[in-house]
Length: 102
Image 1 (tube, one colour):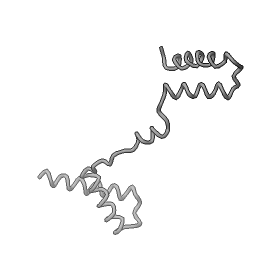
Image 2 (image 1 turned 135 degrees about the vertical axis):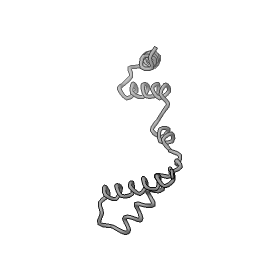
Image 3 (image 1 turned 60 degrees about the vertical axis):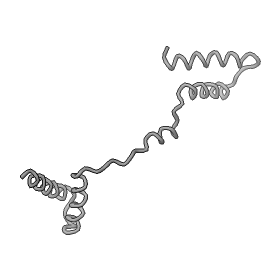
Image 4 (image 1 turned 45 degrees about the horizontal axis):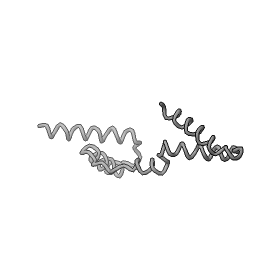
């Protein structure tokens, strides 16, 4: 049985029990359906927010290098655009990486 069919079945049963005494208006039906839905699907926005709190990842050597070198290069050449800055720092990283191999 799918989650949807479980919710619909329980809603039908619950609303029939409540309906024995009087007719239910739209607000009451909505309240019942919401209650049943939340029982089966307990995740709320608040819970989702808590789950999405990410742990800080350790920066790679590349990320650290890029951060430091971009700052230095921007300071020396503030008129260069981001594309050129990234290109230059990438060249520096490649050179550094080749030096380590040797």
